[in-house]
Image 1 (cartoon, helix red, strand yellow):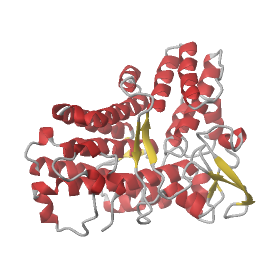
Image 2 (image 1 turned 60 degrees about the horizontal axis):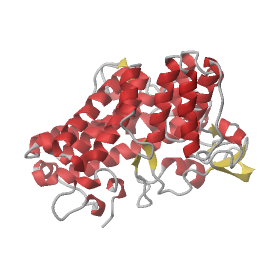
Image 3 (image 1 turned 135 degrees about the horizontal axis):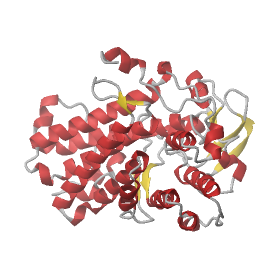
Image 4 (image 1 turned 180 degrees about the vertical axis):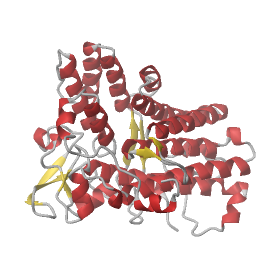
Length: 398
């Protein structure tokens, strides 16, 4: 029986009775009708979390190649195009389809669990499912040009973040009804709210939610060596193969040991296409290394951004340096608003490296004229991934 490690930290505190989510095994194919049994709650939850975690890996890799995280040196044409900022419908399926499938799986899981669980307002499976549905929508918001839901029309990208917040708030409501054993769910949901509200521009709410997340908090998508589906997608593209290099990025300029958050190794060879020196990322040296979805240190940078938007350069830099101190990195300085924005952009790069977050940062900070680095990088590049051919073919509204 194959153990599904993706649930180890998902809601480990939720287990009731003799079974623990740390001892989950893959039950194999299940008849759909069997999922209407209240006892199938854990099985439904396992499936939807697994789908979201797969989407996290694809976003971390493909959006990473399309951002300041990595440079393509690929024999795979779609990776090379993404690295050049050519994000086209014909190649969006690599990132779009898995993320949309994950969102659908999570939201359908919630609907089913609400019908089958005896007390939906106090169900740990429903609390956890709302949380993962929130992250599924946030993932889409971070790379997709437009919001599309279940065959519906194209909507503004912001709808993903609004939908994510609704799910996160529902997760908090159910978790609060259950009690203190659900503290990790509430914290992860508040982290997701902070992320989404920052992008939507409600800075007061972003800061308020971020303040509820401690420095050392981490919520991750678990990866495993059990199957190809479960392995870390960034590792697959950069260690198992050599399709994307750190060479030519900001992290490369810091040196291989310049910052502990962006480690890399010079393999003394070129990448797959032979065009660039191959600097191999070392954040995910193994196929089973987890991918962060939210971290307390990111919350401090959200607080820093809110301060900076209010004109408080000193306060913002203090928050940034607090994060750097946690990583034993020397403090930075900035005396003007423009300098502070560049420092913040660079710090978000270091903190969120290879986590699928930087494409949205590159686009938003460039569009608003806030970061000279982002503006230079985004010249001549697409800012987001359009709907895939599969989405267009199956959706009469597109």
